[in-house]
Length: 143
Image 1: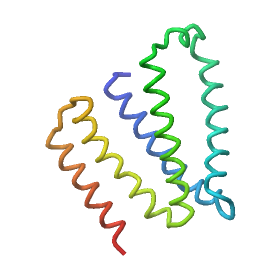
Image 2: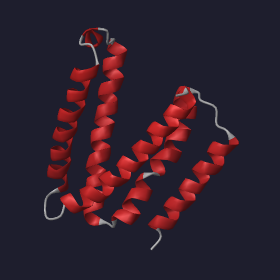
Image 3: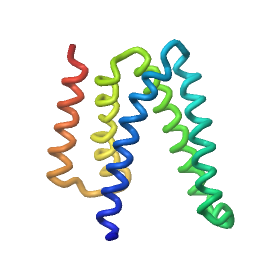
């Protein structure tokens, strides 16, 4: 299948599983500390992903990682962990139908950061889409 089509399929699958994550997490955190829930989820992810790596990636690839790879992947992991912790805490306190869309404000922030840090072009579609996400986020916060 063409490369351009495949990234779209993977992105849609990511969105589907992110939606399932929110629903399943909201049910799963009932009556427990959100940090404990995040830790349990992280262990499951750790086992799942390393299982996939061991099954599909040559172990020699680990040796090819550079200091830059390690640094930025570690920083990304820290950001992911903090994101999950705040997300689970928000889910515990709020309605999943409001928390999950507000969490997606990260899309608009990513567009801005991709421009500032990575030098990616901002298209009119990105400006309109990002603006709609911000407007939607404000609607979800308004109560």
